[in-house]
Amino acid sequence: MRLYRFFSAEYGMRSILDRQIRIGRIEELNDDFEFIGVALSEKAERIALRNMRQRLSVKNGVICMSKGWESPLMWAHYADSHKGIVLGFNVPDEAFYKVCYVKKRPTLRDMRLNILGDITPDDMKRLIRTKAAGWAYEQEYRSYRVLNDGVEIKGEMHYFVPFSADMKLREVIVGSRYKGSRTEMVAAVNDPSVDVYMARGSFEEFKVVRQKQECMWV
Picture (spheres, helix red, strand yellow):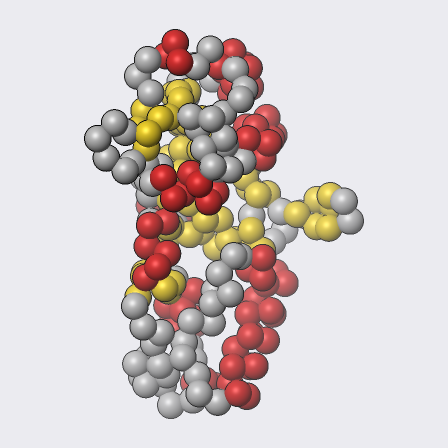
């Protein structure tokens, strides 16, 4: 399937040139409810679940992508207010999990559990794919990765997945406010099979569409 990753201009270009995508650390994700979406009334259980998330974050990370690229909110929030870049990849269907958006946090009872200690690996998979309904505009898909072969950058360890047959770059979309040139981008991509183009706001809807007039980006 085709999935999309949003970047600022700087990090998008770095990803293209280095032919890799950074794996996000679980504790760095921007939703504080990540991996702890179950409603717990007992303080000790809430602490235990947060500790569980911290332990998972030590050796596990996540690649977050979106099913579409047309959302103005996504461009505003994750592509530097339309100044950034979106990369479209072909990936195996089984490599990514679709996020489930819910209006209410599930309770242990909803999950058919008596106590937090009864939680199973399948229950954890459900939790880590559950987000609040307010995030639904992201149309998010996730791939969970073990953190191996880190690279130290400015004193911190970072982890990456290279472009490959299972992470094949097929589109490069720059925002309507992108400052770089088409010539520079095409040279960086260096692959005529990749579709490189600019986006713009639709004239009729609140969505982002392809800029068909190529003279608008030189």
